[in-house]
Length: 450
Image (cartoon, rainbow, N blue to C red; front, side):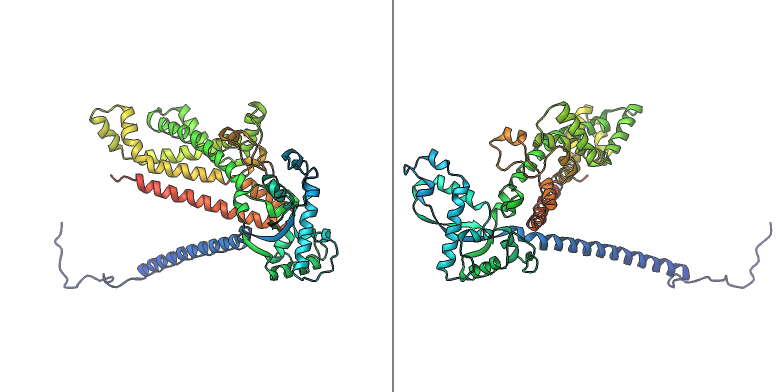
């Protein structure tokens, strides 16, 4: 051992604590670049979100407005009540074909009274301006008010989809060159009727509360009945998927022993969460329709299929919520004499409830937007034209659903259905937004801090 000798020289200094060296500058620059990349990614995401929402709103907002014509219709007794006894049975024998000439004559008289010049000399030449659904509307009103037969009644009648498209810019004079449904003379009449005030656009409540229509009556199609079909399906999913999913999660997380069997179940639950939705549709078709003989296209079948699809999502989110509860909560409950069951249901489950509710609502929102499994079980458009008669009928009667209805509209040739498909997407997004807001509110309401 030797003594250290002092040479009188101070140790060499490699840098200062206040001055950044080259490596620190590189790290700081790298951190700044990472922040810029993150902000750029967020900005790009927001930009594309704005572009998407703008496209949806601009293409779909027109579906919430429709063109109507105020047509005075003379309810001719010679046509509607030949016996003159106002017998409902006799009046019901007159089909819509008997009302169509009355409406066309009323429109022709409206044009003449307004002083509009036209080359059309026959009332039937103006039928292209009127929706094919007009006769059914006038007939239903007449059957409900038989005492008005013989009077001239002013009806607000839907204009045809071509006329509506012309006012919305969807149909132009150039695009109708090869259209056999309408010509330039009809568009001239449309402009003249709009100037006279007999033709106007207004809010279309039928789009929200109505039912689907045939190819020739795009202006009458609505989403109301399919919205009700989605509602009954979500009831089935809620009352089946929530208790089954939560019960399975509690058992696997709190009570089941770790062995090969439970490992096999957990692996399969994770795999089911990644299975394409169309596979669940094939399973529902085979199990619920072909084997169990449940009614095809019924919301109860759609709800069962979506329940199978939603269960893995609810189980995974519920187990994650249960795992997030600190073990000290369980230990404290057991330490004061609570049983395992009491510790789970009285202490752990209430603390995990915000996450469970959030996962459930997100699973329901995912199920609400599914289309492929519903198409396989026959829940397509133009199945149900009326609202269900009651609760049982709502579950068992053939119906459609919002995403399936939107898909059907997007396939049809009439451009008016394309506009309605975008409008249906707006309504579907509103429902999804409401469900996510409910999830946030419930999470905040039941949130507990420990």
